[in-house]
View 1 (spheres, rainbow, N blue to C red):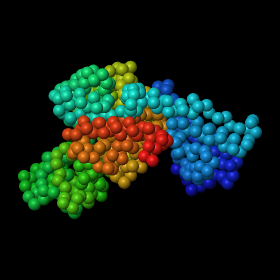
View 2 (cartoon, one colour):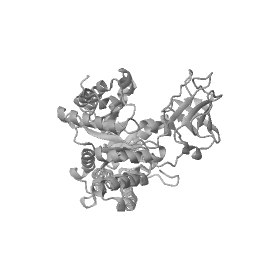
View 3 (tube, one colour):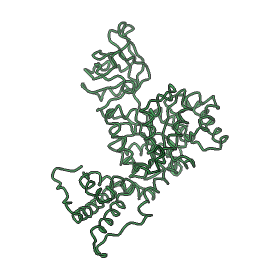
View 4 (cartoon, rainbow, N blue to C red):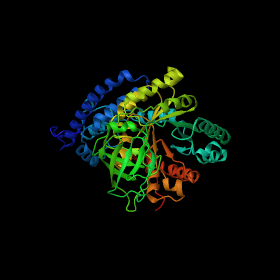
Length: 501
């Protein structure tokens, strides 16, 4: 961030602009390299040395307000630095060299222009890492399609065959549902379908993590729905009263109550019901409804609870996760790590994998960190360094919980920033949650979600959730991604010929 004491660069002439950029380049390298040295001992994968240094330089670059410099560069026909993610120093060097030509510096004073190979190295590294993590893309489409497997995928081989045939290249299994016998049947069907179709399809298995959910629900005689102003009790255990005077909802992770305070917000069912804590007692917390539709909201068991503004100190690996890891470590192509929030969380999972696979095999396991909280967003650079510095690694933008945790109005902004940070680190991204949601569930897409699906082409993989019409949604998403890659590559528009005029 730019501090109030930082003077604005003097860029009234092309020469002034050149000197400002040279100074900027020197500062970015100095600060970026200093940050990189603090990470260096963690990095054991040599290819990530490039991504790690570029990430450090990108963070140094983006801590400055560059809008005035951008505005000065644009009329000169030069890069405005807005697409520097994968090549921070090379992009600055190219602009400085071109500006040196404009200023007609003597040959001995002109900065050296980076070679085309050096300029594009970051993009090549991202492509290489995406292949290592996600596999080779199809010849028609750069972006992979992932689909969450419904329980029926364990018994209906034809369903899985159809998904693979339509373009699914990753099957996601969620350990929060079903059991190892069902997971094994799903995996067998995925492997068989991939073999039959002659198309690769890998398996991501998500650990459930400490996801707070509703348990037993007891409505009052007169209140089956909750409306703004109503009160309910979030209970530490099962509701006791057979005919309660207050609406009661069980919280399946009771240890959260020791970390909550009056005035904190709690959202229920993916943000459908907003509440505020009025008081906390031995039985639980009394909540006042602050956000609900006019007709009210029903609360059902097994719905998510979110605590925005409260940084819960919960281990990302529960006892159930550790038991599930015995299966996951042996059968998954990649592990989805839910509610990871720090570099220490990555080290924790690696330790568990070492115990099951041995260090050498554990370092080959692909880890996908699901970014779901504000703390995870803040700590993303350190999470990336800890993980990608030692093994194949990708990031999932888990937009469901993340939107509730940071606020829906900030979701688009934070989603963009996560994409930029990952591109700077040359780490592949999975764009997830509610992609084509209406289509998947009801067979009729909204206009907004079609645009959202088109924008997902900037990631390396897109995830669809389970639903009755998911096979048709795979076909539509395949068409959207294939067409959009001719128009967009990450942040850069592709100027193909317009065909409508």
